[in-house]
Length: 134
Image (tube, rainbow, N blue to C red; front, side):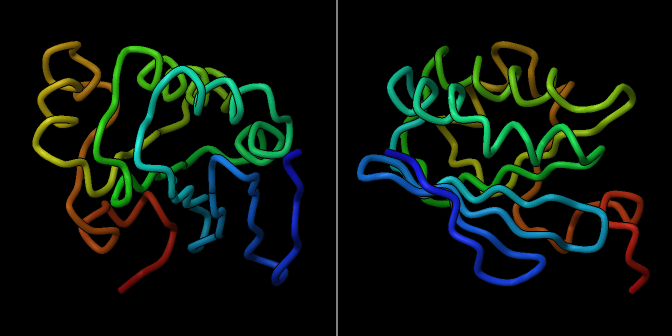
């Protein structure tokens, strides 16, 4: 059972026994930190069917997905990224953070790196991603 736990006004956590996603706001950017080691069909089904994450994604035009804890991804995991992007308002941007070499290669091989720019750190995102000025 996935539950929505309110932590602060700009920070909430979506969790279940098998997957963790932490959502937080950084200016106008919604940051989704995936804390499951595998981005695959089972993770995608749990997160994809859960309206809590999609509810928040639908409200934001800038989303950064942090894959620091994800070590393996497959096509089903990439489909989740596409599903999240499609749920966002028109003209939205989705950024990938902390993708390891294997995941970066998978994104590159599927040309998704052209749709979802990859960065090593949130501070490398363009200013327009967060709406915050340095």
